[in-house]
Amino acid sequence: MKKIYFLLAFAILSCKSVVSTISEKTSVSEPVEINYKVEQSDVAEFLKYLSSDELEGRETGTRGIEKAAVFLEDFFRKNNIKSYFATYRDTLTNFKSPAYNIVGYLEGSDPELKKEFVVLSAHYDHIGLLKNKQEDVINNGANDDASGVTVVAEMAKYFAKTKSNKRSVLFVFFAGEEKGLLGSKSLVQKLRKKDFNLYAQLNIEMVGVPMKRDYLAYITGFDKSNMAERINHYTGKNTIGFLPKEAEYELFYRSDNYSFYEAFKKPCQSISTFDFENFEFYHHPSDEFQLMDIPHITKFTQEFLPAVTKITTSPVQEITMTK
Image (cartoon, rainbow, N blue to C red):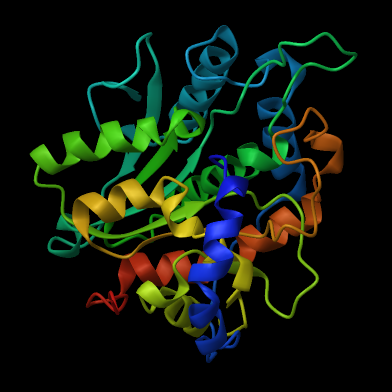
């Protein structure tokens, strides 16, 4: 996640009214039934490599993130997910050295709905190596955001196997997020030129450890759309709640969802379980695989499958902007 802490003083003053007016609860109903099991072993294997020392913290433009790019390309290829562009690599237009978003594509099965796109995304870059000499200089970025990439990869695998998406789905792993949302800013300009028909974007950001709350995750920009309410309706659970600190820190503007919202003015939001109380190693070398809660990540992914399925299959666009 792009740096957020310097916003605290301003945000606490400006967002108290928002915090006091939004309920932490949303309605739930009967869930969409999913006969598919996310395997803990697959989650662990994928996340362990993506956050390994071999990738040297995945800083954009380095040899470490190049290894990550090859890994993600191989994942798409292995699961028969097509490239949206000529290759899986989408070159950033706003970074001085070669850098790439990795973009996969599954066409929808409905002749009309396939003209609409759902974007499932996460950033695979992180902040690389520390400059000062100490025992551990690798910022592995397991929570930020190898965990989110792992979830999106599992969702991609699910759709590739079940072929249950009536709308087309774009699976995007962004580079340059830590440099100022560069990957998403670059990509949206290309998509706009292609008259990309976006329905909604779900961006997965820092989901490696659970919260001690009565909901599974929170969504950024809670009150900007009815996405939280719709997700809970689709899962039949209190999956999404309102986190006051999300409004205080204005996290809606701090991740790759914002680039898409700014370009398309459609529901584009990030989903997270990092609540500023449950993980102390933000942008720190100790953000490592060993601290990730694999059962939680697996449960998170499994619980979201009914939601992403319904988002890609509903006959009308049920998720809408509210402000």
